[in-house]
Image 1 (cartoon, rainbow, N blue to C red):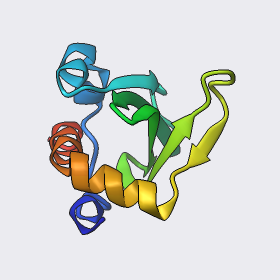
Image 2 (image 1 turned 180 degrees about the vertical axis):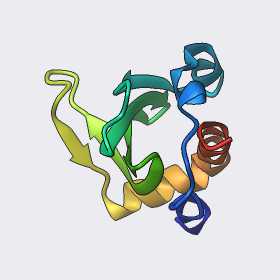
Image 3 (image 1 turned 60 degrees about the vertical axis):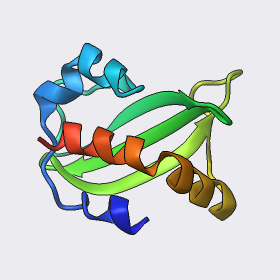
Image 4 (image 1 turned 30 degrees about the vertical axis):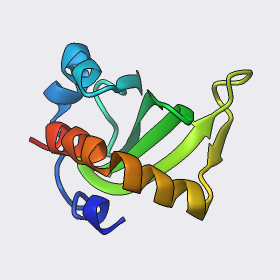
Length: 110
């Protein structure tokens, strides 16, 4: 998680978050894009990383600065239902896909 924590406090680049093709090239899709974002808001992304089917990634921002990052699984039956990952699942995600996540966060904070 240390590799991801370094993005806390960084400013997101709204143009890159809006760039569906750029996100798709990284394996992500923006599911919720407030435009314009409120002072405190959140961006929701989804990706399918093998055993992490319907992985959701929520990035909470305050004045466009990343304050919190959440990983969870989105229910296929109810896309508003979000279950947080267990510690084991989170460790597996970061071990297997850490570089993918770093490329994603590098892109949205450029």
